Image (tube, rainbow over all chains, first blue to last red; front, top):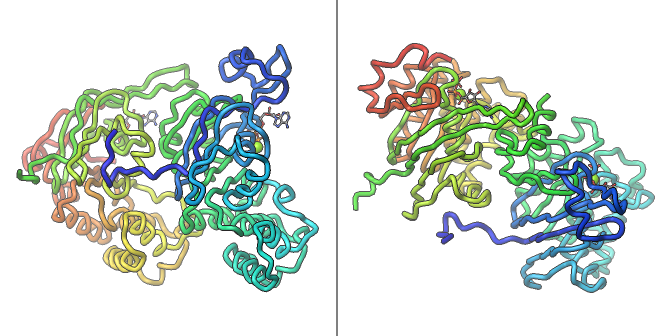
Length: 287
Length: 255
Ligand SMILES: Nc1ncnc2c1ncn2[C@@H]1O[C@H](COP(=O)(O)OP(=O)(O)OP(=O)(O)O)[C@@H](O)[C@H]1O
Ligand SMILES: Nc1ncnc2c1ncn2[C@@H]1O[C@H](COP(=O)(O)OP(=O)(O)OP(=O)(O)O)[C@@H](O)[C@H]1O
Ligand SMILES: [Mg+2]
Ligand SMILES: [Mg+2]
């Protein structure tokens, strides 16, 4: 299709093509023995788990894509493969950032991938213990990615940490307290501050507010939403909570037993879900 | 070429049905064979009794509902024509905002967002500068009788009528070329309703095409240049307001 300027769609920063992840031995025949049609991600024959298969999507700068689905549907697996925390079994994950052009993350050597992970991509985990060192101060947790990126000047690191804490609404007088002493909402804010330290192009959020009290969650959510608006990030948000998806994303995919069963505009998914599984999820969320 | 005679929207043979997989797989047919065109500056009111398909039609045009069959030709500012039924999700997102806006009866839940922030944000997302957007937001909030004391209050604590006026202010700031309105003034008292209607009336004067549902004959008589009457998911009447209005049944406009 020909695009004129008013319908010009932004070019993708993250592009995921045919991504698949199998835990255990892999044999192509297990694909048809697993997924929504058979009702399980676990291959009865081999015991392997097809945690994600044939996942395709693109995310542009300034855009947030949601991944929804029940527990075990493969949402976190997709994020971990994009972040390079886990090797994918098959497929491509491409990042397009200004300096490097397009790179296939899954084919990079470990050192380059680590660099990319530090400079371009951050993950915010549901469990702050995964994204933070709980025994380290808030300031120290933020300093960590900065030093990894080559920052050496102590004063500059502290002022950058202070700036980030301010931005994520963590009182500055808590900068030198260890994170273990922080409330759940505050830990999540420190995790977000840390994630933004190196001005990433891509941020992956895995259930960023699950487990928080409703009022605390809404504060964190509001922070995330403002950051999405202000910074030109390409974002993927995993959540089983439709209110999170509704507030943060414009488009989403629905996963069931490791497969994408629906891809939709977020408002369309909520108002006119097509797949029976999506209809079940939306009905459950409304109840 | 006289561009005023070019329609902005042409729907033809539109149908919409819902397949409810988890309710014995039944199919609910909501729209059948809907065809009509809208010109810039026209204010078209959709009338019809409850369940006639008015909201469904607006949502199909905005692509909140997927189109089952038919086409929705949309004439872009640039003159190029696209079919909303066929566009990808990403293209729809590009089309929304600057070209097509949608204002429903309810303000989308946005906890912790201040009134002024919400309205000016809508302007920024349509390409206004932050300063212009704040100025315009202040202007429309004043016109809609939302006092300054409420501007930095979170929208969640507003009354139903205040929420609805904030929603209108956000929907009408830097208006898109086609505006879909679904009972936007239903919760307002007569005085505030009159103010909101004035604001909506200005849109058509500015060349915006408006497709709206009102449950209020006064609003329709004041605003509509044309009325489309629907029943059971079909168009049963379509003509200039002066011709169709006398034939409207009370049930066509009752909530
Ligand atoms: N390291 C692993 N080894 C073996 N199986 C794994 C591993 N990680 C995940 N799985 C399996 O892969 C499937 C998908 O898991 P994943 O964590 O992606 O689900 P999820 O959608 O994020 O669920 P939740 O909502 O509970 O977080 C599950 O069946 C899970 O048990
Ligand atoms: N998401 C949906 N899923 C299933 N059926 C739907 C959905 N949306 C609308 N319908 C059905 O489509 C028909 C038309 O509904 P619609 O809301 O368009 O009526 P309306 O003319 O706007 O009525 P009202 O004046 O009461 O708002 C109804 O039978 C309704 O139940
Ligand atoms: Mg998970
Ligand atoms: Mg309706």
